[in-house]
Image (cartoon, rainbow, N blue to C red; front, side, top):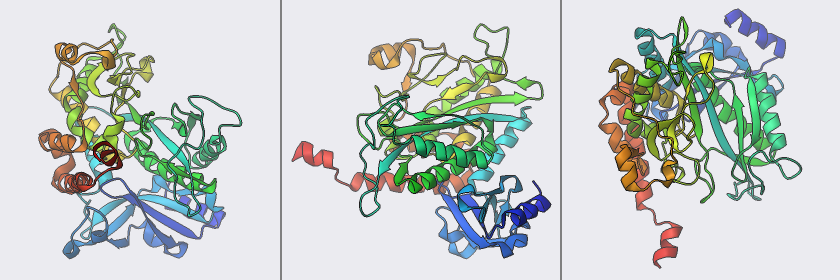
Length: 436
């Protein structure tokens, strides 16, 4: 995709508006819409904006910023009748330098570190889940399930089927290869899986996916929520992240001579993930609500362990081998900023490789059914119980702090600490019911 190709697509489709997209520190998708008459300025990266108005970006006295488009992300939006197009941008400072607080730049830096260590890149395959909720007469979501069915159920009761199909059509038009779409375990819960790809491409696709899902759901009269635990005592929404490093010779995680088919690189990478999981949880599970999903009994991991098949462990190794050898990190949820989440998981794994961390034995038993003393015998630690604990762990992890850099670390943690403090000041309905 180059400027000539983009201009041709604009002309062929009769595009009238172009949307410049980027994310803030928390991963919220930001849009700046311009008439197509400004296309040349867009393509040259000459569009400026006020960074002081974006959460966690810049101060008022240093607020002029540029949006530099990644031309490979240009797409005509299928639901606009060809009248709108979008392009994802990198954020630059007023003196045309990459902005240290841009989450996309953070992931790029992590990928550069992988290259220095001899890896061509990281393949990532996400599984973002979401709920569909009906709307009231004021257009506000009603947080009750829109159906009464469960995993892989179908038929007339599956009111979300047509929504999933239209989401898939939109994603296909944007260049995704959708692999599966289905009703998930919880009532009103859904999943649309798309093919893995390079880490940066996948992060771009996750933020785009969430945008598309909300747009299409609204067209069908639903509200799409990526909240990890919108309904108590049923399964929450996760975003399992499959990942594998590769070199010029192929998948760096596969070893035909190993009993489990895992290379030493894979084992060190897993060890690194386990070593840093309690800290990167502050980013992969970024909300107060995230930790209401990470509880026993609802298929979400609570404990820092790994296994080839045990879904109660933080890391699972799917059965496929050779080129498809990968690990599945099961704690992230779809509220995570994907650029930061993938960057921190990658650097955690690379830290394990650099330090040749020894991988503890896999845990084959159901960890949920273990007593605290048995978990202690196995050396199994728990993930943080809440956002505050996760933030405390992140603050003590020098590897992850260095990956984020001073700007992102300070901006992210201050916003999240304020979120935790605000939550602590509220009195919740459960408390009134329990202690009245």
